[in-house]
Length: 185
Image (tube, rainbow, N blue to C red; front, side, top):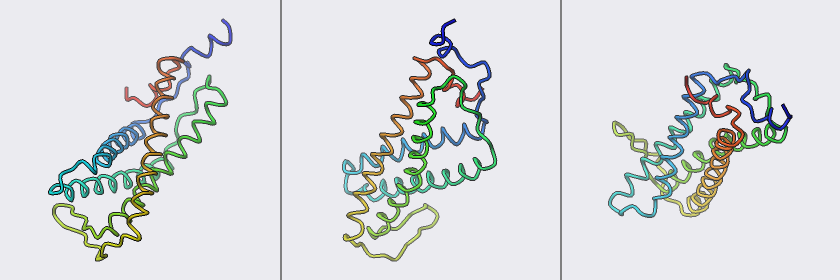
């Protein structure tokens, strides 16, 4: 069999991610989609419901950030499977850069969003209780951080989209079983 055909065959020693990694991955995917949709619809909301939806956006963003911290903690105690044997050096390098960028953006974007939220003079409403930061709206701070938060979110969407396209490429073009590693059995 030629070397080109061998690279298209699924790896016989394909390691799978554990249940914890899979749950963290797909939970974060759902949260990013929900927070992203709410953020993109920000200007479309009627004025009377805008405060509610911005609060939901902030709460889900905070949840995403806390899930990311839990994922970091969990990841330090659980080694991921080795890269698939037949992946190229370029693929492994790009994977590392893309994952680092995703984690960095997932860490920083909610922090900038919370700064924006707080300096907009908003109160974080958890339903049963509220957190009032006691900070009056300060356009000099929230305006640039709001823009930065949006730019970071767009970068996150772009890199996450590239990540998803790469997984689909592996699944449907290379057929190397990479995507199956992140599905539960």
